[in-house]
Structures are given as C-alpha cells and as structure tokens.
Amino acid sequence: MTTEELEGYGMVEMTEEEIDGYLASQSVGVLGLPTEGAPSLRPMSFGFDGESRLYFLYVLGTESRKAELSTGDRPARFLVYSAETPFNWRSVLLTGQTSEVPEDETAAAEEVLTGAWRPDVFARAVETEATRLYRFDVTERAGLKHLGLPPGFEATDARE
Image (cartoon, rainbow, N blue to C red; front, top):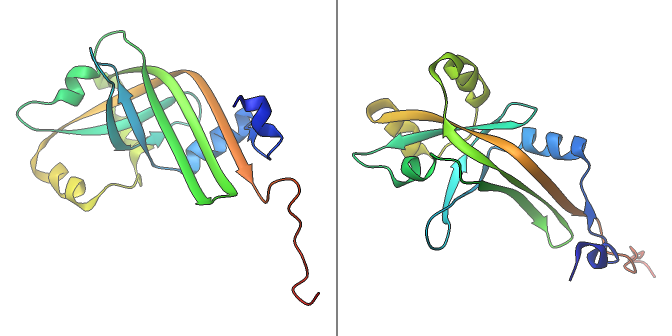
C-alpha cells in the first residue's frame, strides 16, 4: 500500500517540526551502512543536534567493520522508531552520509551525545577501549505516525 492509501487508516506524515521533536526525544535507532551485498544494520545510540546531524560514539576493537563502512561518499540510512501500541507509533527514516567527526568539532559532538542512552556494556567499554566520534549528515528525511484509534473505531461507554 502507498502512504496515501494508509492515510485512510489513520497514518499521517510527520511535519518537519514533529520530526525534529521526535529525534530530540529519542536516543536509539538502527544505522544501515552500504556494503557490496545486503546493508550492514547496527543498533546505535545517538545524539541529535536539533538541525540536520546525528552523532554516534563507535567503540573500536582491533578492527571495526562499522568504521570501515562509515567512510566514503556512499549514502547510509538511519531509522528511529517507537511502537507503544498497534495504534500509537512513530517512525523516522533519514538518509545521509557518515564520516568521522573532525577534531575541531569534537567538543560540540560530545556535548550533543551527553545523556544519550547506551547499553551498560558499551558504557563500560568506553573507559578502556578506543573510541571515535562519527556524524551522520542528513540529506533526506521522512516521518510517519499513527496516534490514536483508526477511523471507524469509537470509544464506547462500558456501561452500555
């Protein structure tokens, strides 16, 4: 079904302001990096700068496929979503490019990442492992949401 067809069931596109607000309220999504075959999908915590950039902290081992795939000029995708109930959900899909944060932008990136949720294992690894800051420059964005019951469903009084 197309987005237009799904609107008949209560799904609507998010406005730019709603997308910004949603990204600012979230801190976890899925990063899709291009490969020769199927994309490499990685759950990531992130910080949103309020405009058009996300920041990530990569914990690097001796080799990092994620860091390797985050360089170059190939587009990547980032998906942020939440589904509270079957009738209350939001989804934002971003397209852009990933790159390592330049040294002169490190302080600003770290500030944006302050308070971003991270699994405990990564929070502990940051203390002992090599890390690098990466950014995701957004070139396209789209958001969909469904809030409330679909058309045709009415709340009924339980006393009837």
